[in-house]
Length: 171
Image (cartoon, rainbow, N blue to C red):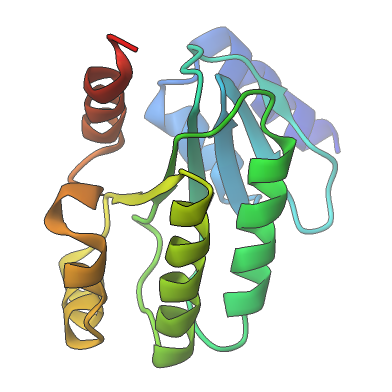
C-alpha cells in the first residue's frame, strides 16, 4: 500500500502527463478511465486512486490493459457499463485507449459490435485510440473496422481529445 501511495503522490507532484507516472501506476492496475476530468484506476484487488487532470465534460477515456478475448469480453463490457454509469455528466464519447490491447478474438469482436450498437442507442460514440496495427487488421477481418468507421480510430489520445473538443466546442 505505501508503494502505491508513493507512486500516486509522485504522479500528483509530477503531473498526470508525465509518461513515467502513467507507466508506474498503470502496471499496477488493470483498467484506467478519465471521466469528466477525473482519472481513476479500477484495480483488480485494490482501492481506487484518484488524480485530477483537465476536465473534458462528456468524454470518457477507458484504458484496457489486456487482450480482448472470450475469457474477459463480458468483464470488459461490465467495466464499460459501470464506468459510464458512474460518469458525473452525460457521456457523448467513450474512447478506449487500446495501446495495451494486443489481440481481439471473435467472441470479443461480437461483444464490441453489440456494445457499440447499445451505446449508439444511448447517443454514445465508441472510439479507439492508440490501437496497434495488427489489432486493427483483426477488426478488419471481422468486419468491425468498417462497422465502426475510420473516423472512430485515433493515432493518439491527444488526437481523440482534440477531435472530441472540435466536435462539441460550439455546443
